[in-house]
Image 1 (tube, rainbow, N blue to C red):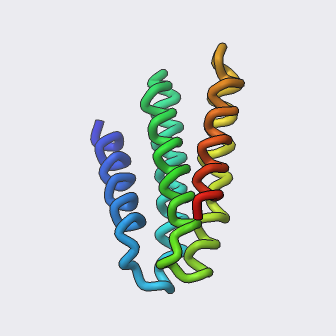
Image 2 (image 1 turned 60 degrees about the horizontal axis):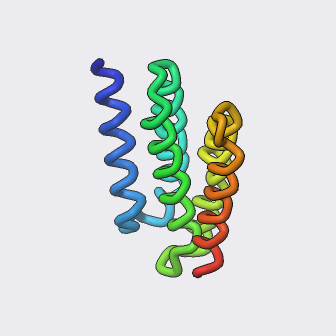
Length: 122
């Protein structure tokens, strides 16, 4: 249980830091990397616990947090690119999750549409 709590706390803390955006540019790539890693660790733990709804929430939250960072005009080009470079991790995990679900194709199409909209609006 302590590991679960620690993963959730790390994920939450890193999410806040990423959304606040007041990280030194030199530390930003490390922050994005750590955030993506925690997301995957948390999603794996939730999969093992058969908590598919929480797993989906975690992955979607991370995906759209990274997408927001990738299009944020207040970030430097390198910071936006760091977010863009890590988008694949939650996106691939969500794709695999949806492929195992009966309505997965529809969920995946909706996810892609929302992600496309996120990038089109900026």
